[in-house]
Amino acid sequence: MTLYMMIWVLDTMMVGWYAGDVGVSSVGLSSEILYTFVNIFIAVGISVGITSLIARKYGAKDLKAAEEYASLGFFTGSIIALFILIICFTFSKNILVIAGAKGEILNLGVNYMKIASIALFFNMLTNLLNSILRGYGNTKTPLFISALINVINLVLDYMMIFGVKPFPELGVKGAALATLIAQFCGFICAITYTIKKSKIKPHFKYIKDMNFARFVKLIKLSIPSSLQEGAFDISRLISTFMIMHLGSISFAANQITTTIESLSFMPGWGFAVAATTLVGHKVGEKNYEKAKAYADTCAILGALIMGLCGLGFLLFPKFLISLFIHSSAKDVINLGSICIMIASVEQPVMAFSMIYGGALKGMGDTKTPFIVSLISSWLIRLPLMYYIVYVLKLPVTYVWWVTAVQWTFDGILIIILFRRKFNKTTV
Image (cartoon, rainbow, N blue to C red):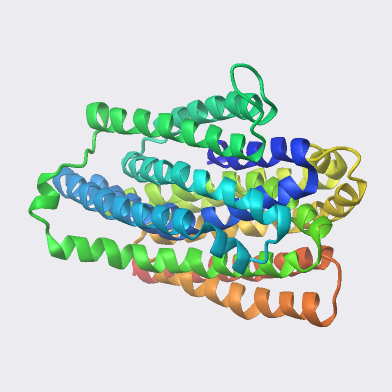
């Protein structure tokens, strides 16, 4: 998960070196929009449904049902991925205008978004295949694939952005092309491994003779998870649009901070996937005590690692921000340093929210994480953001205090509801 997020990080970092705050703003805004679509419908939508159902069927030793869910999930997810590609490619300019992009940020953003939307189509297909592998406990192969994607992306980013022979200097467009090539290579590796070596494989026969009841079960499990991510990501996207009104310096500082923080919560997502898979296996075996033990262990480890990331934010804020932009942009570096220090506060509670939410999904409960996310995002985050940006007109640093409040509420509530759900399930 960290390596996949590194693709966005590397694009933002190198474009920041190449084009300053305008480049960071164009790539940051475009990526934020694209990854919102991917997360809502695929990464935290249909993929979670696939992993959860395969985990429980694999735990119950019902491999036929596991392969049927893998087939239905991959087919459904591929259709959704194609639809997202068409929307983002065709209406890239309209989407960025709605987001508040203007001038050079808009022009660069459109070029980046069109190419990156094709790249993310292959990313979504790879994500679906990875969810099948994770469902039966294979997290190593997705790791190797993401490492390969990163190596290709890193080399091509440098060569295509700055113009190292045989490539011309392509700037922002070069970053998008590098991502496209890397994601395509990753997809080829993922589909080859799944067909040849995976314990659970998708088969066309399950699509031709579709079991409608199982298809409905997959969708019913995936929709609340999608809605949970939608509640969070759409509110975050609206928040990003609000911050656009504070100017390019504030927006660049916010995007760099968001990019850095995205790396810190990837360990949380990793342990959330582990919790979904392991809890799902044990629930399939009806071993509820061990299911709880796995959930608690994942939560403690995730919170510890994210807490250490938060400590890094406190100790080295200027160094971290300066990695993404030229040293002459002192206003962006100073503002971003304060933002990243505030972001350190929310790391442990964010881990609890993600991981206990993942454990609930492993138990087949995708509704509870959605309700919690809906409350924290739309009843806490957005009203406070609007009040700070438009009424009080405070600087972007206050936005990060709002997210700290949101995650604290979210993390505490999800722990309480997980304990209650576990107690009821055990009884």
